[in-house]
Length: 417
Ligand SMILES: [Zn+2]
Image (cartoon, rainbow, N blue to C red):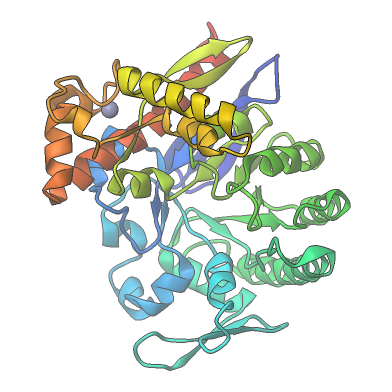
């Protein structure tokens, strides 16, 4: 393995902004589009690193700076040689700056305060005040040792309107320059590996602010660019619109990371069509835990892909008819929309699966689908068995990676990687 960070575009898709790129890091290469399972607290819930590899995960989000400052703390991480060794993940890794977590925490001003220097929060046990600044965030990320680290930013709240978006943008830009200056003193981790620094574009849902932010951050000439803010990944129509605004402003040879995108397999397909390369989301493992298992077919639609739900054939047909009847009588009936969403997911708690001997998703080649039936997973879920969480998470993450592989194949076409 080489101690470098490099990105190259392998193939551009002629029909939309999708492309396949190769990211070379000191811990291996990543072929995009690539979904990153999230191990915020130095583990991906319910999954071992072998499970992650078996799903085809090439890169993970390993350890968030805020969480790592609290537990196990930088002393422990440094002494065990960083996050790769600590969690036994030898592949590529990205970590985030803590910006998003302190944004969530700052809703409660008793435990976290944000000012122009950074965020100041209380350690959950000791009550000791921890200062998270651009400099200390970068320093912590060097001890975590991820291959891609993020500039410390202020996440833009959706509720704050233009003034709040502008304030978050200005702070983010100032912190970006501070993060960059500190990173450039030594671009390596505490263990000698080259680290890439990505900047985060803010600006909320305001086009001019997003464009202003994209220009500023590109001007700073970083290793890659991320699109952040509360709305990204959460509301897909706005997310797509924002990516459409900023993507033309980003250099083609750099990676575009849409933060928090991946509530649904289709979400990946939608942002990749607009030029996104990498994304992370806790939803696949969280949905799995709550009994929602992705179930659909990845089909070619026009010149692109679509994830089409195929689940709950008999039961849903019946339920949908009932819903339609209801909507005829009441124009305000809303459950129709919810039902549509559920069609891309199988809700394993439903009794109709108690004797269903099929795998979760026909044609799925994940470990779970190759070995277990819906009937068994339904039983495990009902019994609250830990094994259920593991098997369900393997399937959901596999589906996200399968969507990425199918996009790669379509983009690459006949040529080879
Ligand atoms: Zn499966």
